Each structure stands twice: as C-alpha cells, then as structure tokens.
Amino acid sequence: SEPSLWADRDELRTSFTLAMSAMYKAEVPLYGDLVRIVSDINKSTLGNALDPKVLSMRYGDARSTRLDIERHGAIRLGTARELRTIRRVFAVIGLYPVGYYDLSAAGLPMHATCFRPTSAESLRRNPFRVFTSVLRPELLRDARARDLALDLLSRRAIFSAELLRLLDVSDTQSGRLTPEQGRRFVAEAMKTFGWHDTAAASHDDYQRLAAEHPILADIACFQSCHINHLTPRTLDINAAQERMVADGLAVKDRIEGPPPRACPILLRQTSFLAIEEPVKFPATTGLPGLPLVTGSHRARFGEIEERGAAVTPAGRRLYDELLDEAMGVAAEHAPGQLKPEQFDQLVEETFEKYPDDWDELRRRDLVYCTFRCTGRSIQAMTRQDLDGRPCRLETLIRDGVVEAFPVTYEDFLPLSAAGIFQSNLGSGSKTKGVDVAAAPDVDGMEEALGVEIHDSDDLYRRVRSESIAHCAAQLGIEIL
Ligand code: OOG
Ligand code: NI
Figure (cartoon, rainbow, N blue to C red):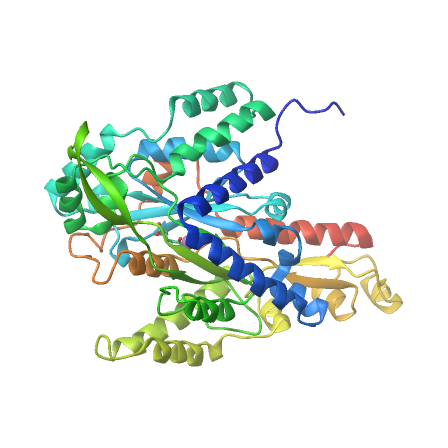
C-alpha cells in the first residue's frame, strides 16, 4: 500500500498526551512527584512474583506499553459552542464522546461526557481520555449570577485562530492532518488547555461568582479551559495513597469507588487537593490593561486511579445497589459522626455480597470478558457431541480450549467524579443555588456536540463478541 500522506490518529494522540503531560509537569510540579510515586509502585507490583495469569486477570493490558502513557485529564467548559469545538479538536486525535454523566444530583450545575478512543486497538495503543463537563446555566437559581457567568463566557475565546483554521483544514481532508499540520495542531491546542495567570474577569466578578458556586468562578473567569488534573493509573491504589500521605501530600480522606477486592472492578480514585495559585485580575472586566489586582485561585489538583474490570449492566446494577445500601446505613448516623475509615469498613462489609471470583463473575454475567484460544484442541468427545451444532462458550472454557480475560473499564463513575469535584471545591461547597432535582439532558448535550454519544456498553459488547467470533473462526465451529 502507498505510504500515507496523513498522520496516524493514534500517534497524534500520543504526541498530544506527551505535550499535555510536559506542560502540566511544568505548571504543577506536584504532578511530577505523583507520576514518580505511581511508577515506583507499578514497578514493584509488577515485579512481585505473582502468577502471570493472575497478573493479566487483575490488570488486563496494564503490562503493555499502555500503562506508561496512560492518563486521563478533566476540563470544564462553559457553553455549547465550546463543547462543539472541543468535540472537533478531540476527533482529530481519535477521541469520541462516550457516556453521559449527570452531576446535578451531586449539587453541581453541570453534566459531562468522556472523550476517549472507542476501538480495542486504539485503547491498547494509548487510552488517553478527557472527562469533559459543561455548565448547565438553567440549573442556576440566581439569575444575576447566571447572567454574569454567561456574559463572561460570551466574551472569551479559548481556541486560537490558528487552531480553528487547522480544524477547518482537517475537515477538508476527511478529518486528517499531515504530520506537519499535526505538530502545529498539538502546539496550538496546548494554548486551550494551559494555565493563564491573568484572569478574564475582575476580582469583584470572580468573587461574586465564587460566592454563588465555586465552580462558576473556575468555569467563567479564565481565558482557557485549563486542564485541572492528569491522572496516572496505579496498579495498587492503597499503596499509592499511603505513599502520598507519607510524602506529606494533602490527600483526600478516602478512596472513591468499590472497596479493595481480589478481582478489581470499575474504578477506584483518590486525589490530592487543589493547590492555591496566584492570579492577576484586571481592575475591570473587559478592560485589560493596568492596574491589575492580585488574588488567588484553586483549580489544579492531582489524582490517581486504579482500573478494574468493566461490569455489565447487571454488574453495574449490583454495584449501585450495594453502594446505595452502604450510603443508606451511613445516613443513619449524624453528619460527620462516621469517620472515613468507618465508612470504608461499612462499604467493605456491604460488598461481601458482590462475588469476588473471576469465574463466578463471568458465569453470572457481571463482568465483560474477552476470549482467546489457548492452543489446546477441542476434545474428540466434545466434537462428537456437537455434531455440527454450536458449542457453549463455558464448555470450551471448562475444557481449557478457550481462556477468558476481564475487559478493562475505560470510563468514569458519576459518584466518584462528584466526590473528586467536591473535595477540590473546598469544604462546604454550595449546593443551595443549584436545582438538584433537575432531569438529565442527554439530548441537549448531543445537540451541543453535534454527534451522538456512544453507549459504553455497546463498545464493551462489541469487544466481547469480536473476540468470540475470532475464537469460533480459529476453531472452525459455531460458539453460543
Ligand atoms: C472532574 C472531576 C471528575 C474523575 O476522574 O472522575 C474526575 C473535575 O473536577 O473537573 O476527574
Ligand atoms: Ni479525574
């Protein structure tokens, strides 16, 4: 085949990830410490003489090169227009919207999606993803704060003219860029996600919005949608949390997500709290130029995560039920009475009802798996029994002809995300100005995006069925 004129999307994503990582390390030196801690812990976890089969069941593809580069970040956008353009920016590097996260129930006037690769091959090459939330102004009860935020947002331009030009160029090239255009694209995109220490709003306006809801000040008062964290993936989050505490980092008081398990599922996350950074505010909004007022802002924080298996809708229902149950029991205590360790203990006890054995999780269809032929051939007896009829997958697994591996969870958890948000917005962050009973608005988000949001279950199911089809072809049988 002809050598391609176009830059490979996955490689472009890797250049983008590396540029983002270098920028964030320069802007937030604590991030460098975090990456070092996680990489030490991952090395020793992988080095501990565990059975290789146990390793790949627990950590999936983690031993491939993907682990070294694996990060997720988060941004907060203000308007539908910004979201539309971000969608175009991310498409160039192979990231597409997957899943809808309603954050209003947690007191945030926002909803979110995750931009991530959708194919197994792209995920293997670089699973970089961005949790992208957008303001829902209609959830703000205070009309003056809402109008102020919308006015500030209507004035700002978070994309450079050159970045917008390159997006148009890519549209005329079927969504592709040449390697040279790709280099310029990555450099221009960094301006959108970088930190600008001069605010776009006056200190008064900033304080007005912060008093209504701290998230509003962060979303509406700056010139960029600064990346607010980059999260490396750790193979042992409890060990990493201990190290963060020992190193004197201001860590969140508990790890979000499921309790520690022999068979990890979904996602466990913790963070160190946002750092306070100096900011220069123009004396009057819209009138940049001297004099400037100095103040400060907390926006950027550190986060780490441990990823386990993706769960099926049944597995997710059980997870949500048990978490609800634990929270129900916790709610019987007076506020603040239950210490974080006691809550963790309660969650652990409740989750004893969640099977913790890979075979059982698979047989009860609680986790997604992919399947591989082991090289062992089908027993003569089984083949005879089959007599041309389809063979049950479980029979092939029992006979050691096919092996099952849990699929890594590639998405986020709304409650965990809310916990991370809240811990970084400072204690007592307000929910009173937000309509917490609002309905989710998937249609509104899709309209803003200009494309449909992928359903993560469809993507996991596709990976599973492709692997079954592959085994069937290799064995020359039909698999049920
Ligand atoms: C996003 C918080 C959510 C996660 O990993 O769930 C998040 C934010 O604070 O903007 O990053
Ligand atoms: Ni995060």
